[in-house]
Length: 206
Image (tube, rainbow, N blue to C red; front, side, top):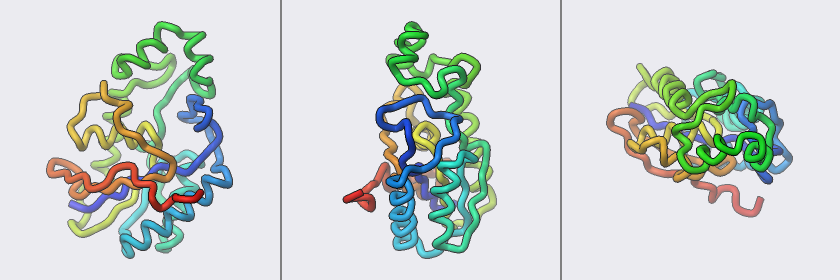
């Protein structure tokens, strides 16, 4: 099985203070573009040969993936399986707005996230199944020495890492995924070895 480099996109509006971004189309901030550039340098320095690069179809992930792929002469391939969590009618809301409009669901989201289905959106089980299909799509039949890059979102990356680590969905908030972080996974699948999680040393000073 190959090595998977799992990245999150760079900084965008709505990360701080946080909103439910999900399927919204957001562009990288100046800081996010610099994070993407630094991440491209980090990936190229650590893995001079990349077989292919995939990403969520959102603008912010495509732009980050283009920055990385450009160092290798590769064009990113967007896959819907790596799209962000569908928050439905919560899209664009601040956390306080969601709490006020859906107090019971908000309380459940903070205490038992695995039990919440967003109005007109997804739940974590939906996301988990979708992301796993994406992983199988990009790794099946790939040469054992190949290095694959996937640029995803906070939620998609957390869920994928949780699956690889055998974690229950109730621990959704346990794993941090900062903008343009790097995760390294050898043999993603039945024989997974997670080498690195949420590394951001390459972003110091930004």
